[in-house]
Length: 87
Image (cartoon, rainbow, N blue to C red; front, top):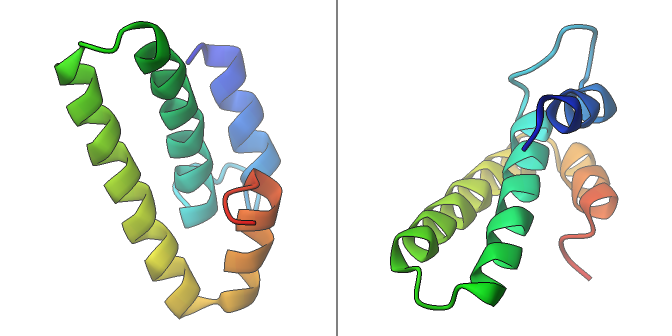
């Protein structure tokens, strides 16, 4: 993830000015990294280290989404809609 892409994602999902650690920002950054690794795995099927890293990121994102759904269901639904995670 290049610097411009990361700051664009942070600016899009921040709750207030300078917000880099909210759950929404963390999930959005993890989703971008997961998408990058998924594309990588499509061409490099036998890269098992990257596969393990991808699975760890998916688990981390799942835990953050579970936390958010318990804290504020409205923010959770808004986030999964913006990221097109669930259909």
